[in-house]
Length: 215
Image (cartoon, rainbow, N blue to C red; front, top):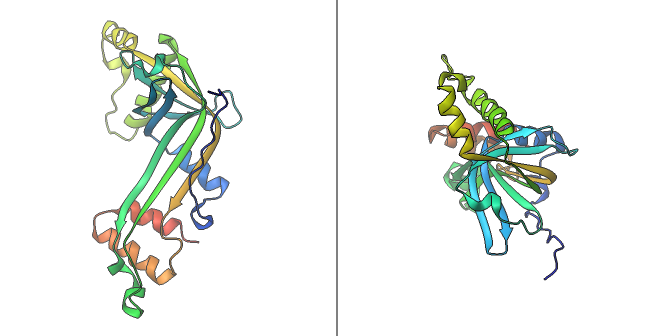
């Protein structure tokens, strides 16, 4: 079998393909997703929190960590590794469309935003590297709290033991595909209905993204 990478591409109609600035913003906001690698034994996936880092490539890197007992980091990667990130997603009822009352030719759909990030996977079995990453991840998610927790709040010996139990991973990005399917193919009157419907369904996050994504 050839060791050449097999390139895969996400189906993305033109009206669901964000411009480069919107794609960059989406990627910068990613907090977690699925790391997928192809090994001699088949596909292996792990969900993990990540940060976008300047990295060593022109597109940057996604960095995170795996449990040392998770042998995904020890398995040889065949071709590119893939990280799948998700934004808001929601069921869209055709009853929200103004078009329903006009002609009835409407169907349900699902709105979603996702990024497929491809690249070389690099392992960092280095407690200093992992320790710095854990601090950055913690600071990112604790920043909004009134009394943020710090790594230094835990006993140093305990923290050192925890760091020895994890391994850092870095996906050096070679290409990124972002798809934002947020009703851009519907007329404005239908989009208005989707925004209202999602708000009434308790999904302000999805409603806001639909509104931002209008063509």
